[in-house]
Image (cartoon, rainbow, N blue to C red; front, top):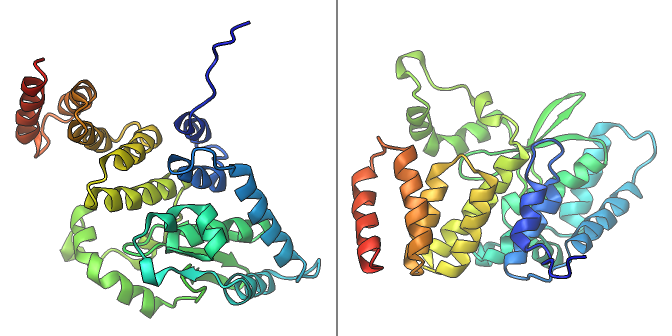
Length: 289
């Protein structure tokens, strides 16, 4: 018997959760992000806490409640009675992305509130999904009466005019990136309301943390986020490049060179190719490699 087996690290645990898109456990994976801050965090406790909230909502419903009633009761309990909402006073605090803190304080950012709300909605049998809308994560529920788009910050349903108004500041840039032909008109609003797969939702959560820690130049915490992004998005060489740059900031020459050289080989026509080649030479020279 091998007595030297090491327990899985938080990153190992996360990797096991996201290895397949089939039945990816979104709530569990999202809750596990906080283990970089609290390695001893009991993720099962977070799941149990959400299950208790679900039981509270179910207790308000009859067995034959229709989908509109289930949605109305969920909104009432989640936002009015439990008081979930935006942490407007400290919007960019990393704790807003850690589900155990969102559950404790009832405060978060749209995407973290959405993860909890979606788990409850799906537990009630509602056809609810996230929407990776530009600037502000949204949710949608397909009801018998039609599609309802919801702001996870406050539970308000959003009409077409409001959605178009929210999209306006981002539309030109998004259409340009998508290669839209302006002669053919704008990209239809409906294309921005597509369901967000769990892997993409987790990536958006991690990229929120990435921007927070990068702006603070908190390289150790940023590296932990980058490790998760590389595991989550193994084919995204941009994340591999960014991890290499963080390794460089931390003086990890070997790891930095491995990541940056992998990016350069995979993306020979990238706009930053020349600048990164110079950075690779600089890192190698400083490390005597």
